[in-house]
Length: 349
Ligand code: TXA
Ligand code: MG
Image 1 (cartoon, rainbow, N blue to C red):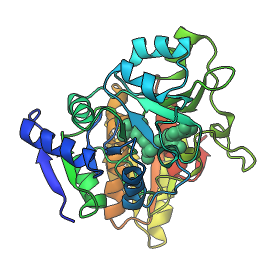
Image 2: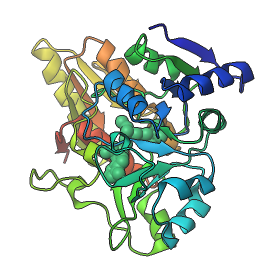
Image 3: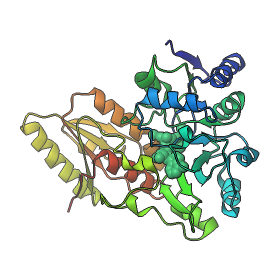
């Protein structure tokens, strides 16, 4: 299959957008930008179309998809009951990087929800995404547009690297703003719960709803705890070289990473180092990349996956990263980084 690249970096191309809508309506696949990461879209109400997403990504079939909508009233047809918390959250954060889980109606096929009786729904805050959802019929299932097991794509070329020849179209909207997948909140239990941390953090949710606990399975590595979002049990982003995170006071972290890098190079390896603008010059050895600046934490979330992809292309044997416990996004950034590191985290004293 030839994958059509539609350049919309300067705004909506009406003709190409109409074509995207046609592709979606006949069951095809279109990748598109959102404010979080690029998504791989298909008609959420068409089981065969959803199945094509799993095939293109190589995704386990028990991992449900998020249904993307472009207006709040679209919820009525796919959700059995809209709790008052959902209205509050939607008013505050939709369109935006928040996904909510509801009991589903029969209109949503089990092929979209991985066999679950619940459905995840999000209204993304991106003009190209909203236009495409509308053109495609209003209900677009979309996981991140990467091959399963690779970092989520934050620019169109990442999507092409993974999925060229396997999907019908890629809408290029340039680099995304946030760079980490949406926050997921489960509204089907007795109290709302966070199943995946994201840009909308626990404090922001609790300011509206009172206590919103985080799924305990996310907080420690315990094989007996199963995350409530099936996708969180997979080690998503595992750089080829293997990743170690070093946390602690800045000077101690720099010293320790330098020791580890020296050891790696002495034994014939090549070290990769993930630093920030503030610290790049403190690392004399290895291939050193700045992910962003600590004075603007969204620069760190926006570039994290891209840097992991870059290191996959380089001949490094081990990657060392600083920890990024930043104020708003720290929990989400560290959740993804710790998963990429397979829980390899050391404390520098
Ligand atoms: O920011 C995002 O959410 C991006 C963009 C494209 O919108 N999408 C995304 O989709 O991250 P994906 O498929 O990579 O992650 C969806 C997550 C998975 O962990 C999945 O298990 C969980 O949502 N999920 C989906 N439906 C669910 C449900 N009914 N119950 C629990 N978890 C669910
Ligand atoms: Mg994903």
